[in-house]
Image (tube, rainbow, N blue to C red; front, side, top):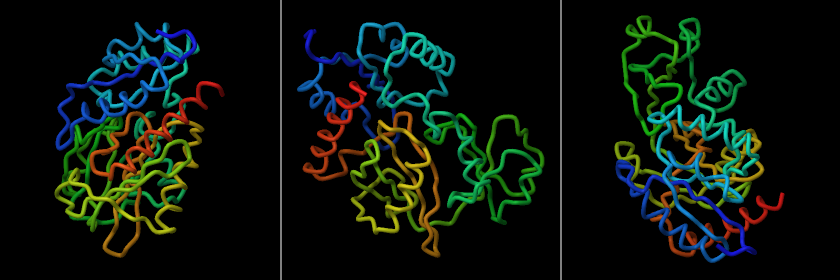
Amino acid sequence: MSADRPHLLYVTDLAYPARGRRYCDEDIHLTARLRADFDLALCHPLDAAALMEDFDAVVVRNSGPVLGYRKEYEAFRERALVLGTRVYNPLHGRGDMAGKQYLLDLTASGHPVIPTADRPEGLPLLPDAPEYAVKPKVGADSIGLRFVPREDLAGLTYDDVLVQPRIDFRYEVSFYFVDDLFQYALYAPDPRQRWVLEPYEPTGADLRFARRFVDWNTLDHGIQRVDACRTPEGELLLVELEDLNPYLSLDRVPEPVRERFADTLVRSLHTFLTA
């Protein structure tokens, strides 16, 4: 490796079997661009803790849901803090990086989010719905998600699950940011096909909606994806704030947008390394 170029450890699970997506293609594209500015090595998320000490920073990208390797992920976080290793995204994110508690916090503070409860006494505050989504607090990629009628909610064990009304929505839309800079938006016109995405031209109100959650998260550096659904009444509600390893769906945007995103990411990483 060159002595005068930053050394990055890029964490990815190239073999992760994502439904409707090819993580490996996205990371192959991004690492090809990053190599022009950085000395780069790729590793599996299970190897990151052992390797990080020899690098200037660790870039966590498509590393897959940590639900399957929670213990190893916590060890990685602890080692990074002990060593003072820079991790991109920084480890103090308040969104999915920290679990789903943010959905409860945002519900309690009146933000436009799908109403969420995690205990029986919170259920009366949820709107009536034919079904309710029950999901693990540390889940991702719809792992463990199930739908139940309201009469079944009383029998749940609420140690590690969240409950939300199953929202009738027109479509889902995602807004992609690097640092606090909006990059592009994509939406799924067919609610039954979450990952069949098309470019979306956001309105000013749409961007104000997305940016309020980026601002709330207080990450100075990193990649974030704000996932929302559009209700039949036209309102946007937050579904998820992805700040750990959000898939970017770069294959769904025009090449100029894809290249602009990569250039912005390079600039962000340079700034991050000198902050």
